[in-house]
Image (tube, rainbow, N blue to C red; front, top):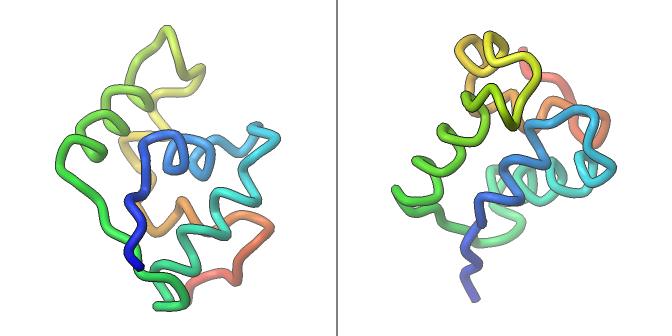
Length: 82
C-alpha cells in the first residue's frame, strides 16, 4: 500500500521546534530508505515551499532557502548524511 506524504508531515519534519519533528522525520526517512512506499504530489511540494518561506508562519525564512530536502530527515530520529 502506498501512502501520500501530506504537507503537514513535511512541515513538521522541517520544523526542528515542532513536537512532532522526530516522528515526521522518521516517516520521511522510512520512505526514503524504502521501508514504506510513499509518494508526493507537486501540490504538496508547492504547499511546503509556501509554508516554509512565509514570514507569518516561519521565523527564520533564510533557513528554507539553504536547507535541501534531505535535511528534513536529519533530525534526532535519523542518521546524518555523509
